[in-house]
Image (tube, rainbow over all chains, first blue to last red; front, top):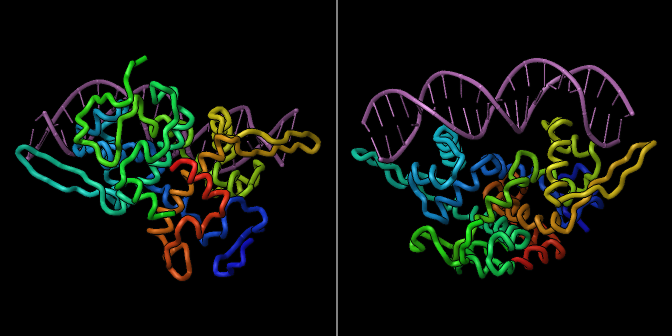
Length: 150
Length: 150
DNA sequence: CCGCATCCGGTAAGATACTG
DNA sequence: CAGTATCTTACCGGATGCGG
């Protein structure tokens, strides 16, 4: 199935499913560094999709999260290059957060999570209990974000 | 508990980006219950993609994880309906884990994580430093899993 | 008010040894 | 081989406080 020699394979390729080749280093593990932590994807969702751009709005949007954890996650996501401060003022002190291009490109991950959820939690999510496809949930801009990866 | 039509919004829809409608309950948050925990997606990747189906192989595949945490995650993923034991013997004791249909449907989430990673970590992942598209990384079966959600 | 920092109790994760 | 038992450590959740 795989003839690509440029990728080191530590294992037998016959044991692979779905994957055409092996990575030198697993992109899933790498990506999950900042994004895999608790609340991180929800914060990204809030900033990117729900447009909750301010600290206290993010707090209210996620019942259970504490200011301490939120501040930590925001810094981690900023360090990972997924979000950035779009505005910073004082009196009144206002900090607005926005997605970077890299953060925007992470949206398809959230979309797939939503697609999966909409298949298996449809009775909770929709009154008619009918699972939705991605194009029913997200607009054209979002679908284009997905298509760039296909 | 909450009677919400699918288009009813607790917020201003003008504040939405990408999303066509609001959910009664956020599918991202719901889905991230079992899948969002530390190591969970990596375990799913190992079982579903790398075909590491046994306890000790999963242990070795994830440097840093302890048997205690692995056992916990396996039970959580099993309870969430994403994995199941495909075989269970004694003398010698052998347990093999496999994805359920629900677990297979979660693969596109991992694929999108990989796609994102392959765009932003290409220099680490590929010797020619060229980002790959999903169809270059995953085979037809995997692409079909994605397409069912589009 | 808003964006954090501090302190503290609880829970989840890490290290190691051990058992059916 | 596939997990437990036990102990330690790191992180999270909740309340409160403080500077701007």
